[in-house]
Length: 239
Image 1 (cartoon, rainbow, N blue to C red):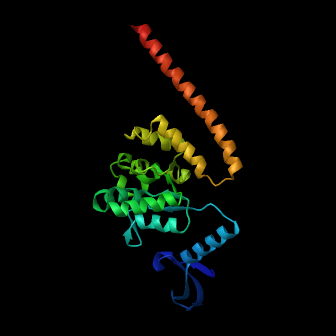
Image 2 (tube, one colour):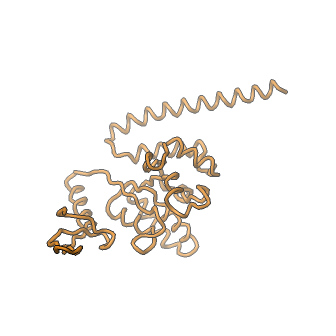
C-alpha cells in the first residue's frame, strides 16, 4: 500500500495518510487531509517569495461535479490559482443561463474569471467524444459564450493519442460544424496570440515567439490574398 492515496472522489478534495490496514478485509483507516486548502496555502507562499509556477487544471468538462453542477469545479480551479483551465464548457453554459436568471451573479463570475486572468483551453474533439452536451455534434459547443464576454480561449487537443486528433483537426472541426463566427481569420489570429500570452514561459521568450508568430501570420495572409486574387482572375478569364 502507498503511504498516500487519492480519496478525492469520496472526500471532496481530501487525501488520506494510511494509519492502519485491517487484515483480511478491504477496510483502511485514513487520516484526512484537505488537499485543496494545502495547495492554496502553498501557492500563496510561493507568490510571496516570488517562486511562481504556472497552474493549469482541467475543470468544467462534464455537466456535474461531486453531485452538483459542473461549473463549480471551474470556480474551484480558479480559487486554486489556475491561470489556464482545460475545457470549462460547463461554466460557459452556466453563464448563458445567468443572462436571464441572475445578471448580478453573471457579473460576479465574469469579474472573478477576468480578475484572475484565466484562459480556457478548448478541446472540441474530446468534448464530442466524452460529454453528452455535444450529442448533436460540435455545433452545440458553448465556446462562443467565452468569446462574447471577452474571455481568452485557446484551441487544444487535450489528449491527441486517445482522441486521435491534432491541432489542425481541432480548428477544422470547428470550421466544419457551423462555427463560422468563431473560425474567421480575425478570431483565429486572436486565439493564437492569446495562446502565447497564456503560455507558461518567461517574458523574454514570449517576446521572441510574438515576433515569429507575426511573421507566420503575414505569410498566411499573403498566401490567402494571392489565392483570392488568382481565383478572381480565373473567374474573369472564363467570362
